[in-house]
Amino acid sequence: MSLEFSVDFRVFCRLTFQFYEISNQMTKPIFYATVTELSQKLAKEEITAVDIATALLERARTVDNKVNAFLDLNEEDILAQAKASDARRRDGKRLGTLDGIPVCIKDNISVKGQSLTCASKMLENYVAPYDAHVIELLKKAGAVLFGRVNMDEFAMGSSTETSAFKKTANPWNLKHVPGGSSGGSAAAVASGFCPLSLGSDTGGSIRQPASFCGVVGLKPTYGRVSRYGVAALSSSLDQIGPIGRCAEDVAILLQAIAGEDHRDSSSNPESIPDFSGKLKTPITGLKIGLPKEVFTDNLDPLIKEKIMAAVDYYKSQGCEVKEVSLPHCDLCIPVYYVISMAEGSSNLSPIDGIRYGLRSQRATDAIDVYSKSRGEGFGAEVKRRIMLGTYVLSSGFYDAYYLRAQKVRRLIRDDFAKAFEEVDVIIEPVASTTAMPFGSTGDPLQNYLNDKFTLSVNLAGLPGMSVPCGFDGNRLPIGMQLIGKPFDEATLLQLAAAFEAAHDIKTHYPEL
Image (cartoon, rainbow, N blue to C red; front, side):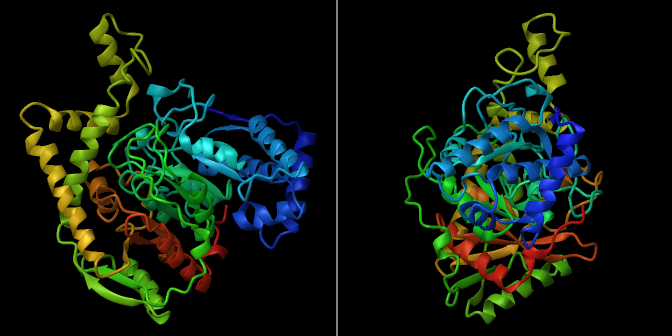
């Protein structure tokens, strides 16, 4: 994949001048401005959508050779979208807060006419024939679709190292991973390439990279956002969600993409609240639960310290904090991987070199086409999960593995339901460590164990959110996980906004 930049030296100088002119008009560089700040500037005609797009393209041109967040970035298309936004505004037809605001798209979400590779050689030349539901909604809102960002291959991974095309770096330390599978989405926001991005979360793939990259990421309740048009990993676990610099930005994007869609059978008709409207509501009286099975002596002391400092802040604001129990949380890892691998192997079965995907040039018959195409096109982690998933679904093993995992999944969901009879929100770590160095994630089993704090949220279908709450000694970000009742994303955003207002989270940027 390649970036499509085509400017001569004179144009480059003009764009650079514009970039610094715009930046000087704001209290921070334009590439770190929030959605609200940019939207207000647009409304006052102090800036145009083309100005924003131009500045962010220049930022990507300057910095992405270090971060490698983008798989595809079409400057001509982006500027055309921005010009259309400016034309609407001049005609008095502004579409809303997101009109003219850039949003990066994870490369497993379908945008008509754009590549949809899922970071896999198997789909390297595939072009999406239709828009995902969330893309239809973003286009209606006037957002500028700002390129395709990197991910773990078919969303199978927690570091973005399984991508077939490039390794995305953590903007806070380029020798460390950004997390995954939505590593490109989180790194793009943290690097100042866009104020917002879309990711997908099957077992923590929004929250973990958001934690590692020091940004805010929200996995909505299962069914809150349509999955139509996202390349499925695990159909009973996948959920599209927003990543942004702050709770307010995430609330704005969630407002735009949430809602029922008849093309997704799991889509829920639950009414959509005003997510931004609750952000400044006092948090006094909210009940916060701390799972006793999580906050043990085995938890990293620094991560525990940072999260408990946040809990102490909530106490000071009148929140009630109490211990709760999630007795089956130690079973989340085996349950999750049985279910996700089984569903993943099924969902990838059409990508076989016959109907879709790369076709091997060494094949001599139909069986050869199937086996060699998948062998050459899929990476090691994807092949590992396909084989394990096929095994647990096979005759004689379905009841022993997949069916039993679904039964235990119900127990995990019941644990949360019981805990939420006593509290409004549960707080846990997002990850057991900060971002790991490249090359340290070679052991698949250890990688699976690193997901232990995020998996339960997907298994129970609950909303979960990562909020930056500090740094470790190497200045790598630490994320706090807020877990809510079904369809209560508003309370998570409310708690996140209160914490942000009392801390200087939004003033910390990686030095790129």
